Length: 111
Length: 113
Image 1: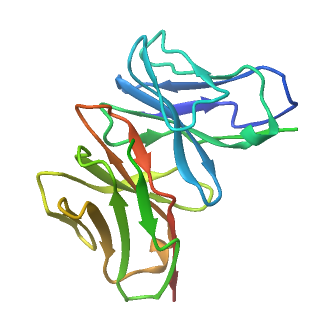
Image 2: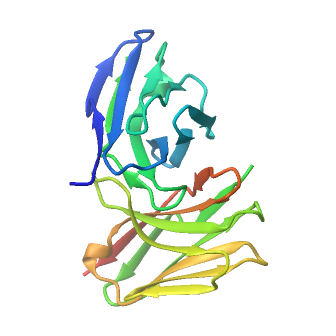
Image 3: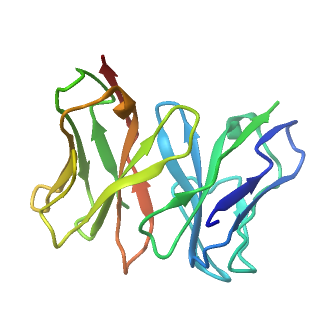
């Protein structure tokens, strides 16, 4: 089954404790991206990657890191999370920057 | 960079009526315009998209129109049904260029039975 998976689905953590949210797709897509969704602000792109070892900043990259060492995986790293990073995070993949297939979302709370 | 404005932020219609959501974009290089539907508690899913070489596209009760000169595009839903109730997002990207996808802030559509 073609899908995008994210883990964990829910995470409560404390300020400053490094965390990683994993994202994996099995559709051989080149394009992957991370979004955060906040009430009233819609979906904002954090980082995107057009291929292995190629990443670029989206609209809200501050406080986040990504890596793309393999085509299928695109982890999101928060080195020192802060409360303003409390949000719903979606990973997505696509052949190009066209039809985005979204993962199920990760709800992150930073205390 | 690209900026996408979406209106209205909320829309309430009676079942059977039409609904129209409008978006404007700022970057004339944008050439791909998708619309996503997000039901409560679920992930966004593509419902229709249009590329800049086309002025209109229809898929059953859903249509999208694009005016490149005015830099705006619209989603039209006819004969609305309660299951159309959701948040709808427009987006724009420059395929072949930056490939960055920018979303509007969303429209919460409520279809009243």
